[in-house]
Length: 184
Ligand SMILES: CC(C)(COP(=O)(O)OP(=O)(O)OC[C@H]1O[C@@H](n2cnc3c(N)ncnc32)[C@H](O)[C@@H]1OP(=O)(O)O)[C@@H](O)C(=O)NCCC(=O)NCCS
Image 1 (cartoon, rainbow, N blue to C red):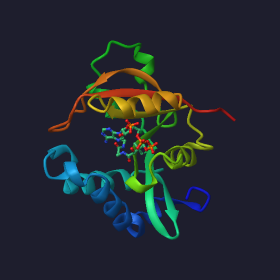
Image 2: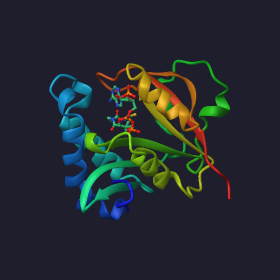
Image 3: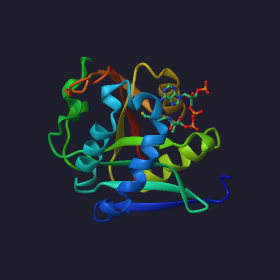
Image 4: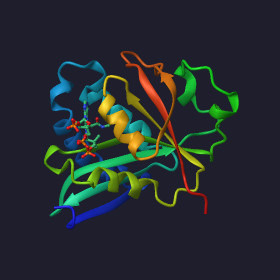
């Protein structure tokens, strides 16, 4: 199943083309929570996707198995002075949250349809997205109510910065995480 995986890369110019595929996978992966959790609603996700995919430097890696999209990861570089760290509740060195526009790549989404989980594909999508990034580090937010996903990221080398609650309505409490990216 994993041998036949084809990973295709998309950027802002192809966002309109890939949008229906990303929404379809999202609707399946988050089917249980879409109805009950306002933070996971399909409209909110679609508008977040449109915001992210129109950012300069947005990139997306989609995994295909026999031409069927099975999961994806996407993100974009944080702009200078980004609001990303605005909801950070931990007391950290101010330099840690200083965004220059070229310092940090934000991994916004990683998801995989259920039949393809526990196969290593999620890691391959993650690595395909982050491979050869010019930034010095990557960041992500993971819900504190999902400790196993947090542990998964830690097992991939991510370090926890502290608690963060995004300044968005209905936003849950998150762990903010950082990953050092190899410098070339
Ligand atoms: C995150 C994801 C890509 C990882 O895929 P994977 O590497 O194949 O790993 P798994 O699916 O086995 O997930 C690892 C563990 O986290 C748990 N987990 C995964 N997503 C979860 C979620 N949204 N909520 C609660 N627990 C979750 C799994 O049940 C698993 O626990 P287990 O080992 O007891 O079975 C995949 O689980 C997924 O698509 N999850 C839904 C979307 C998601 O939560 N994305 C992360 C956003 S930060």
